[in-house]
Image 1: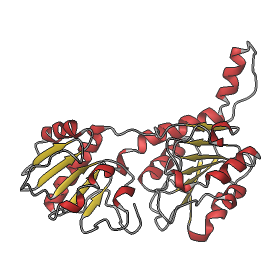
Image 2: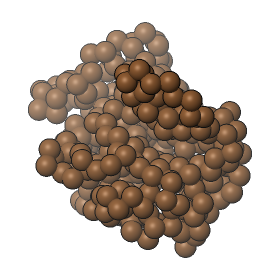
Image 3: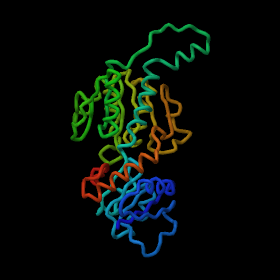
Image 4: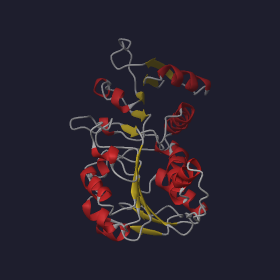
Length: 312
């Protein structure tokens, strides 16, 4: 009988949701911290929880076969010396709709000139400036995984053109053109919006650097909802202060919380949010675990398997 250890600040709610699914042959035990007492003698072969918590116990579970993370990013489980002899899955499939709301909420705010119209209203000024539109604008997706594919599908509804930069995959039908490897600067050239959806790995560290920012047109906006390490923040501050790009929407940073003295707080045309583009909606995550558990029992491929070498 598979035995599941749930380690999460939301462990009790996960336990309740999974119990409601009445999964066959599963026993569960839930703790809210890695330091909580785990019953002596129990042999868990399944794990569910936040990577920052389950990293403390993966080395103590000799029979571990599969760990389901409740985050999209799994960096705490990829540190040197961490074991890799088990299947690791994440929940990247559940964030697409929320990320789309965040990205297109800001893109519409920018394109339609909403803030300037609000200022005109506050000044009692009748502003007849014609609004912009997303239609026919060029959106560049730096990363076209499950979240990027959802963003591409939403872009199609706005009549946008979509480019994608990926390592290998070209599976999303809503991306009109794909770029790989040394084509990064070609990919960035001509974009109206560059949206970063990449995980934080050695290969993606500071991928958006001075060269990429210079390749963007002066009116282009950068949106980062992936990981803060993807963007060279010093280069971004310089580009924003020199007004070499139109602006930036940033939800992730190299250091979080962003220090109050950081120059990004005061750069022109910059919107900052505190890593809140998408939240963990527990029923969706529990549902994904239940789906994967049934796949696990049937010996079928699990959804969201992480490649330890690639880091996502």
